[in-house]
Image 1 (cartoon, one colour):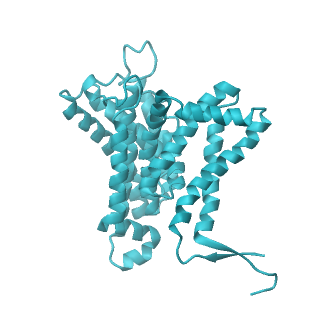
Image 2 (cartoon, helix red, strand yellow):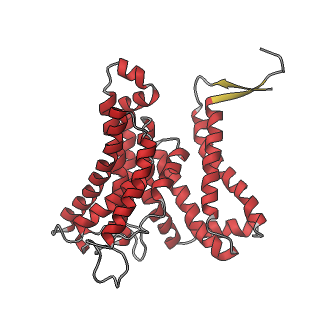
Image 3 (cartoon, helix red, strand yellow):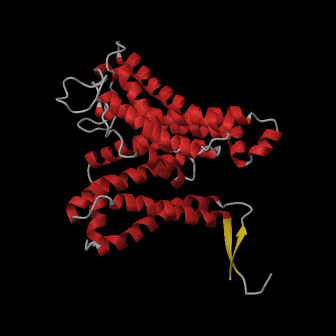
Length: 355
């Protein structure tokens, strides 16, 4: 008979090993559908590895894909720490991108040192404003933020589609639904020439460090962790539970909105309906793989981005669907959730009938 005994303390080495073991388990489990599809397992994984890390361009593409994933992962991690379940990062990303285009397509003129911060700030503020609605509905009316944030994703996507096919449509796009391009002064500089890697990566890394310091070294971070662990006890201790949740919601939305602003200012240069392949939803997976650790989101985002980029190369080389990347990421998440039990409990074998 198997019995789970709660741990008084989780060993640090075990906590660090869990996401690594989960990633390896996911790759091992993904070999099963690959084999069923008739793909050579060794060649498939070798091609995936080469496609993600085999050249300067490949590595730059991984880092480019990881940039929005870091920010949406942080958006989910900081919200989930306070038990505020933000499922609306996709909508916040798109609204941030829409606002960034509205500011950066000519509404503000000046040098890049002025225009770029305004564009990024506009995107962050838009994301924060979108998340404030569900947060206030949660704390004042008891509305389920999972439902409200999820539904707002579809509302924002319809709004974006309406704007890029109407008032914000580029007259030079030959009928294609996309916004006017950002002016040159509003576009983020490239970090590596002839690649898509842009300075937004540095901003995402700075955000990860800032959120880590916030949660682990400040009074506000202590309040966030306390509200997430035991809201009733936090309220009894005099902590501002409502104010903390509102602040967390604004921060979470701002991070997701910043991801959208970074994508239009650093990668696309304009807004189209296919701006995000699901970065907002993938950010939840990144946060869970990282154990809601702000610094861990960097490594988790890098892993998820490498899987997606590598899977594209693998699909071309061994003729399997690139959707295998989604399967690997999903398996990694399930493995993390299962392995998380081992970090909180010890597995004991007990004889039947024993107390």
